[in-house]
Length: 223
Image (cartoon, rainbow, N blue to C red):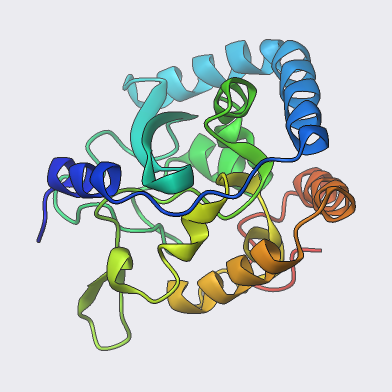
C-alpha cells in the first residue's frame, strides 16, 4: 500500500481542475466560522477537560486531509477515539459500536462537537462549510468480502477535489451512514453539479438541526 507521504506527494504533483469560489460563499464561510469560534470557546474548554479526564491522552487529533485541487492540509478534531486507534488497522472509517471510540467521543460524534476545531480550517480557507467530506491520503474502506479498498481508486475521487471540502454537505446529510464510499461519492457529484449559495444555506440549516437532535451517527434518516 502506498504510504501517506507518497500519496500526498502524488496529489501535490497532480492537482485537479479547481472551480472558482463565489464571493458570497467565502464571505458566509468567514462570517459563520468566525462567529462559531467565538461562541464555542467555552465548549472547547469543557470538551478538552472531558477528553483528557477519560484516558489522559491528547485532547486534539491532527490529520492530513486532501483539499481543493488535491492540496494536502492539516485538519484538527477533538480526539474521539482511544490513543493510537489506527496503529493496527490504519486509516479506517469508524463503524457502528466501534470499540475504538471513547465514551465522550460517542457524544461528540453524535453532535459533531468533535468537528469544532475544523471551524479554524474553514476560517483560513482550507475548507468550506459545505462541500464533499475531506478525506485522508491513503484512506481505506472495508468491503463486504472483508478486503480493503483504497478510496483513491474509487471512481469520482478526483472529481470531488474540484471544490473545497466541507464540514457538511449533501453526502454527509442524506447518504446512509454505512453505504460504500463509492456510493457517497455520487452524492458529492450531485452537490458539485448543483452547488450554489441557496443550497449551501439550506444544507447548513439542516446540519444545525441534526446537531441539535444529536443524530450525526444515526444509521437511518438523520433529518
